[in-house]
Length: 435
Image (cartoon, rainbow, N blue to C red; front, side, top):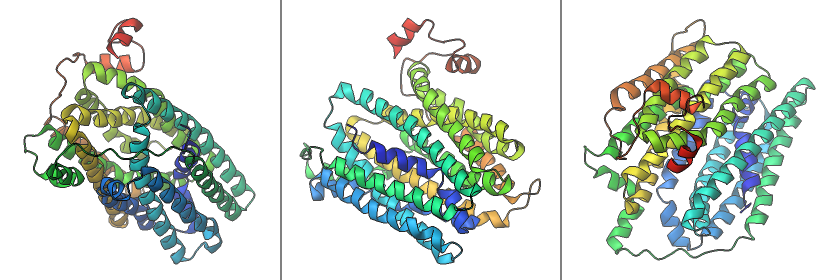
C-alpha cells in the first residue's frame, strides 16, 4: 500500500512554495488569487463527473495511471519557467499548468480512493487511512523543511533560477516513479450497482439531488455554514504567504517554520479531536473551533514577530484540525449510506466553488481596499475575520447534532481535555472504551 505515497508527500510539500515561486516569477496579488482560485473551479467541475468517468472507462487503475502520467508531463514545463522570469506570459503559463495538474489530481483522488477501499475490509480502512495520513504528514513535514532549506541556500547564493528548476524536477521525477510503482497494483473491476437505472442517474448527479433537499435539512444548513466559512477563509488564506514574504520580508527559513507549525499541530491534534467528537458530538466541535478560526486573520494583522507568528499558526493548526475532521464526520452522521456518496460529492463540489469565489474575489478586491496600519492586505484579513464570525454566529446554531448520546461539558473543560490537562472522559481506560 505504498503506492503513490512518495509522490503525494513531495507534491504536498511543493504546495507551500507555489506562491513564493509565483512571486519570484513576478506575479501580482490578483494573479496569486487566480493561481489559487482557478484550480478550485476546475476541480469543482470535474468532481461532478468523476463517478461517471469511472463507469465509462471501467478501470480505476487505468484512470489513475493515465492521469498520473499526464501530471508528470504537466510538471516538466514548470522546470523551465524560472528561465523566463519577468514575462507576463510566464505567470499565465504557470496558472494554466497548475489548473491542469489540480484537475488531474481530483480524478486521481476519486479513482484511487475507490480502488484502495476495495482492497481492505471494512474494519481495516480506518486503521490504514489513518496510518497513511500520519506517514504522509510526517514525511511531508520533513520534505517541506528540506525544500525550504534548499531554497534558502539558493537565495543566499544567488542561483534561485536553478534552485526552483531543480525543485520542480524533483517533483516531476517523483510523480513519474510513482507511476512505475502504481503499475504493480492489482486492478479490481467496478462492482455493478444493485440499484435501478433511475437511482444510478440520481447517483451520478448528486448536485441536483442536493437542490431537492428540504429547507429544514440539517445537511443543507450545515453545507451553507461550511461553504460560507470556506469562502471567508479562502478570501484571505492565499495571501497569508504573500504577507509573510512581501510585507514582513521573511526569509525561507522563517516562512517554512511558520507554515509547518500549523501542519505539525494538525497532525498532533487530529486524532485528539476525533476522540472528543465521539464524546461531545461533531456540532459542538464545529462551534467550538469556528469562533477561534475567525480570530486567526486578526492575529495576522497585529502579530508581526516571526516567532510569535509560529504560535499563531500553532493555534490555527489545532482549530482547523478539529473543524475539518468534524465537518467530514457530520456528513457520515446525517446522510444515509446510499446518499452518503452523493452528499460527499456535493460537499466537495460546493466547497470547491466557494473556495474559488473567495480566493478570486480576494485577489480582485485587494487593490481597492483601504490601508489598515499601512497595508491594504490587513484590510483583507479584517474582512475575512468578519465574514468568518458572521458564519459562526448566524448559521452555526441552525443545524442540530445527529448523535443521540453526547457528553455535555463546558467550553473550558473541553479545551483542557483537548490539550490533555483534564480528560473529560476520566481515565485513559474510559477513553479506549468510548473511542
